[in-house]
Length: 451
Length: 165
Image: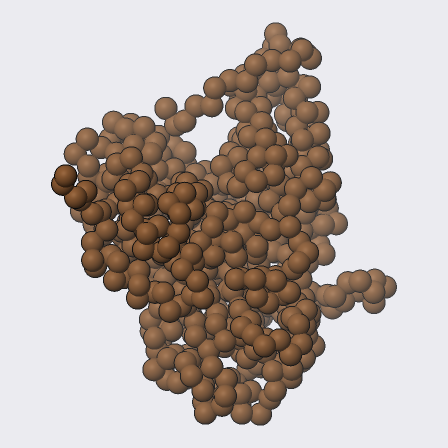
């Protein structure tokens, strides 16, 4: 086991670790009191910028830089939306933080609100986390009672209210402008950007949207300092001026075919193989990994031979994956059919496409229909080319959709077919011996449920 | 003429109004209001949509537009006293999630999204419940059922449970 002491997860396993008394006994809220007393909001922005913290929600954008996009001297209100709609398959780090150490999250929210001059923060929490709901509400109540929330916090002229807002089981609400639309009471259709939320966001006011783990990192940077944060992770590549580096600890969610699934904290840049072997106890049942998702299903697949890739912000992209995403690592063993995997992925995105952009709505739906047909033994080799064409034409990158959901739907398709084409071809030839070579159009099968 | 029966109770309206100071406009109360009604009625019938719209000063179509976006709110009839979301996303699927769903539907004689005739249990496929460390898992009302086998899940879903909050 690497000699790295968990910081973000320090409360896990601590009796009553979720209470304000426990949090304060570990040093919590003292940094907040100090910052409110001694620092200006701009100082806190500078601190977070200097730390190199990049957003933990999936996109990896510099948190401090995002804050500087807010208009200067805006009369307000400015809003902070905390994204707790954690819905990326394989991801559960926010849940652990909210359940086991909610005050760490809340201190981060208060510091971030102070920095951005927000007077209201909404935590958009997915419906599926009732336990997080109760833990967070309890912690918010404690923070009000202790004078860390409400009017004139700690005798300053800074006031802040935090409200919990509950989602209703829709993946797209994790997209920042989908979240904003949902919070406003509308269908969660992402907005065309620009204008970015920092200029025109929630209720048409300047808004910052940050992830729960990002908030926890802000609290730890305030407590332990910029130098501590920058001492962890992977420094910026000196030969690449556009690389901001991958600093700080990261919560990796390990699941699927491993002996010990769980949420593990490690310095950014640990390799997938280290994570699986040193934390996860290896691939289950003594088997080998066939493929590994590096950071949530929308990031695509790494093969066994790519497992030494460092899981920092730049690593997964070097082996053709979309990125680090949520750092949710899902292991798929060598007994699993890659056809089944891709079917599962296509089913997820067909279900969760919000329906606003035609290439995504139709592309995800047709990719599922094709996978249903392939699984039913009616696939043709030509289908693989059609699937690849779908993958290459839907998304923000080819420029056909408003948000990145379609890119996330496309990536598993592109990675799976490019990296495991042989297995797809074998499957199709074996299950459809008389029709695999057909190139004429074929009718879709009716989609069947579990029965 | 008999006045049509109200669906929203005074208590529900009071709960909705209590949240109003949190938001700068009333449309943002749509999702909270739908949750408040759904928690009581286990569905949100069209009559309730019209009444929510009246309370919030919106057109019923605006509330209905939002409601239909989320598959979460049943409209035709109430879901069961226990609503079980069976995860079928990748981490659970790798550990038997699809089989779990099929088994539970079969044993209870219902199709996915269906409710048992006695109104006790609804089984719905769910996308990632964010509990992949306990795959395969089920969310039954507010209870997370971890590391489920088909047999254990079958027994768990026979138990009465506190209402979802």
